[in-house]
Length: 213
View 1 (spheres, rainbow, N blue to C red):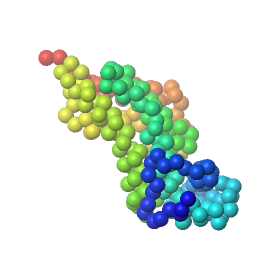
View 2: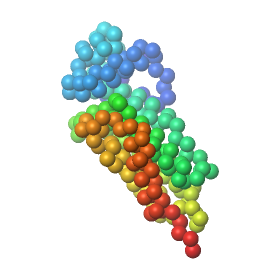
View 3: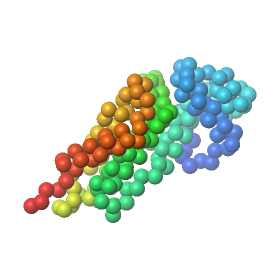
C-alpha cells in the first residue's frame, strides 16, 4: 500500500486492506467526536490501535485521511438498496424511498459526516464537491431516472424529473434533517419519519400526478 497523494482519492470498489479499514474506522470515530479541526493524527492512531508511523504509511496527512473517510462513507451510501424498479407503482416506491433515504441521513451518527463536510467545505472545496457528487447528487439522479419511467398520460406529468426528484427529497427532510444535523433534536423515530414522508408523498403526487383528460 502506498501513501495517498494530494488531491487523489482511491476509486470506489478498490479492495481495502484490513489495516486500512482499521485506520478508517478509528479515524471516523475521532472525526465524528472531535470534528476535523479537533482531530489529530495522534488521536486517530490511538483510536485505530496503530502507531503514528503506520498511519503515515497509508495517509500522508490528516486531510488525505479525511478525504478517504468521506470516500468510504460515500461508497457505503451508494450501496444503500433503494427499490426503484420502474415496474413498481409511484406511491409505494416514493414512500419506501423517502423513509429509507431520511432514515439513513438521520440515523444516530449518520448526519455527522455531512455536518463535518459542511464545516470544512469552504477550506477543502474538493472534498465538499466529491461528497455532493458521490452521495447526494447520485441519490437525486437515481430517483429522477425512476420518475422518468413513469412520465406518461395515466401516471406522472413531470417536465423536469431531476428538479422533481430533488423537491421530493427535500420535502422528506422537512422538520427532520436540519434539527438533527445541527443537534437541536435527536434522531427522529421511525414513526415521525413515516409521518413526514407520507405527507411529502401526498403533496408530490397532488402536484405531479397526471390529470385525467
